[in-house]
Length: 165
Image 1 (cartoon, rainbow, N blue to C red):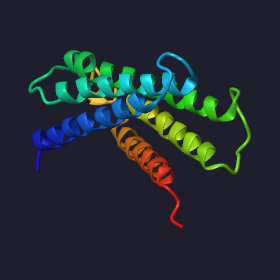
Image 2 (image 1 turned 90 degrees about the horizontal axis):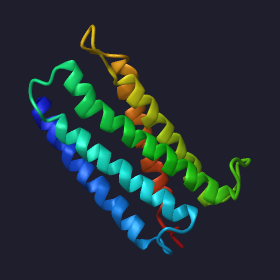
Image 3 (image 1 turned 180 degrees about the vertical axis):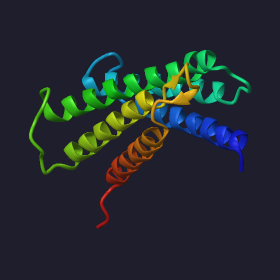
Image 4 (image 1 turned 30 degrees about the vertical axis):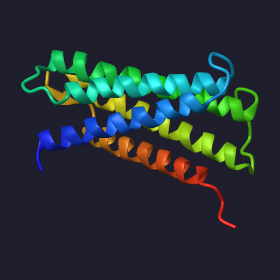
């Protein structure tokens, strides 16, 4: 369809992502208290950075410096927020910084989501545009880890569905 249509799809998707994260934060009890609330708040912040980066990616004729400042930097900050969010959710489930795999659905959701956050972080690093060449550091890795991270988030979301009797 072309880069403009692709960009619009990404931007609209980022709005849905922010809406879902905001609803999650709104349903998390005790504002400002508990790891679950802070995890949700960091996730909302990350999605807002993704809104900014996907919106700015729609702009035409950005040079490398502008692209890195307007698109890559918000994407990188969003990825950092996601890493913080994923880790806080993981700690909330474990009750400490690290724990062995547990048979609980909550542990698997937190672990798979954290893996998705790590993949998004790798994608952000790999998508940095090298000023001297105007090319992404590793476009194939950026695309692959974005897709893998999204798959992890999808699996985590499916695991949230209630069990059928």
